[in-house]
Image (tube, rainbow, N blue to C red; front, side, top):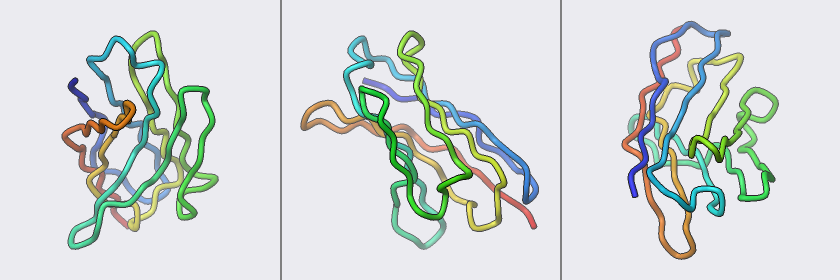
Length: 114
């Protein structure tokens, strides 16, 4: 299973970005998907998660600004990030949970300038 994340870049505070993560997995629709982020010198933290049924949950710092969604037909999970702040600067990783197995994407860098 491979996860390919994309969509990162350099933006100014207040702007938006949409991250994508495409999976090479035929059973994509049955798996929970998550986005994590890791800022320099920090641990990797959960940002958002979406279950196979479409239920979502978000970390407190991003509630109301970020939206996770999935397109099972395209085997892709998205993270829409609005009202970005410099504190959102990090490498963002997608994760797929398949039973006891966990798969990570390679990460995409998001840099928000003030």
